[in-house]
Length: 109
Image 1 (cartoon, rainbow, N blue to C red):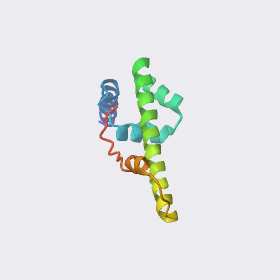
Image 2: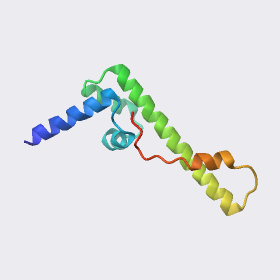
Image 3: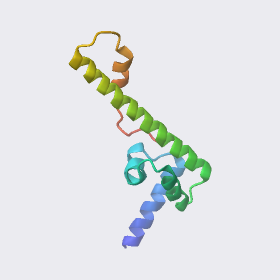
Image 4: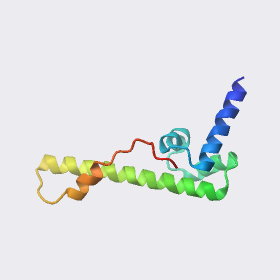
């Protein structure tokens, strides 16, 4: 019975990776958190699932972009805190707009 559950889970993962239905949250939980920024390991795991190289490259690039965006948002929030603590003046409008971006991991790969 356990084998059937695992096989079904892998099959669902494979299908969602192929058709882009996997959310970033799922991708991070399944592969990203385990392999961090070791994209070659993530590629190996996807190849093991028999995902086409073109799809692998696309999903890895999307993961990199998502992580980059999240990093920008975190950085903007830090700048806003810095601005408030030091009572800095000036046009921080762009930084404030970036800081307001929220990632709910509903975006699909």
